[in-house]
Length: 392
Length: 185
Image 1: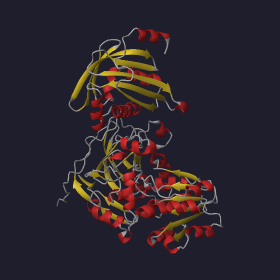
Image 2: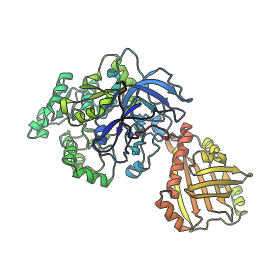
Image 3: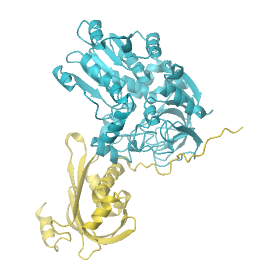
Image 4: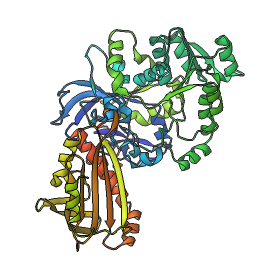
């Protein structure tokens, strides 16, 4: 089959590889019909994530049809059309039983390094380095999906791939970002970063009762997209002298009740000093990306909520913890517990209350993955979200 | 420990790993199952190679004695006979290699309830007197097969085996070999 393989910095290639087979008893194999490139894939692409190996198959946002299943699979049958959550979770450990799927104890067979870095290992993720389990990803024609009783959700044929594909990651991730804001009626939420996750966080904040959402980015096409698809107010921070002061004016001097950082330092928690040093020396990366969190902390109202959904490296520079302390801010963050949100969000899509496909700007063939990564990485052709078709 | 196990213990010869000798390793996991179930899986010693990666076989010889075969790292195959020193059902088992074994090992496992319905804490403590003494420890550490890492890995596998009935693996999954995909006509 064909699969998108990581072959070093800025080098993804479409290769011929063996088709996956069942390995564990609760596995299924899915024939993939649609697969997307995530913003977090760009950090693999840029070579920022350690424990990647040449030949690793990328991709953690995918859906398709169940074509094979192991003897312990009870919740799926051959032929089911499913969306696969990017977080692999056993469903049996204490964390899974408490819907903290991204903290699953049993889904990362290579968690030693994560344990050294973070104290404890967390869940496995498809196509996202060996520290996250070393699982072959879903930018391919087929993928093996473990713990199939706790992962994939069956989706009705009345909905298109584009409508349901983002249940795999970015819709639940955006939704959890908004949920972590603990929104009360009348609340004003500010969102830093208007990529696909930021845009879905904006939608979710409204769904959860925010009276106003203020969207912040520097790419005009993304702000235009926000304006076209929601009632959020937009701020281009490149055109603001002092964003925090501007936000104060827009909120009666109180500041936003909650601030979502959908930018992050985006290296998926690989907390090594050496890696951090590498990141710092990379042009413009280190300072720019911590900037959103610093601003969010300064801008947030006293006693407000900070929700971090963009991923941090581990040692961001000069985080104003003093300001956060003085203002009594509350912080929530983490990888999304996808499985927890999938049924609720599928209902919202079925009821027509949201159609997450609005973020898609490009539909390409899997065999053109190299080009797709390039335009997404470099924001060419106003690229915001790419969906790949494995059949072509 | 109750009086019965105490007298059992005192009836046995001195431990094969002397106090202060050898290498200590300990690790603890919390498993979302009852102690009695976890205990019964462990107590059936022939189960141990299912989750102890470097253990090839455990053969039960009689009520207290077992024969263990292992390959702790490349080019080292070894076997040793173990005797159970003490046992408190659902709570505690301890064992050690018999005198004159190729390697000297003493170990114990405690099963105790975790708070808030989180299941059972399983804590293993091991003392190893390696076959070549401390130099082996240095070598194994360098090859990353040190007793602590091995124990950690085995305990994680044990937890997965108990909680999910399986141990998740990525062995045998596809990966790129540098063969460029070409569209067929």
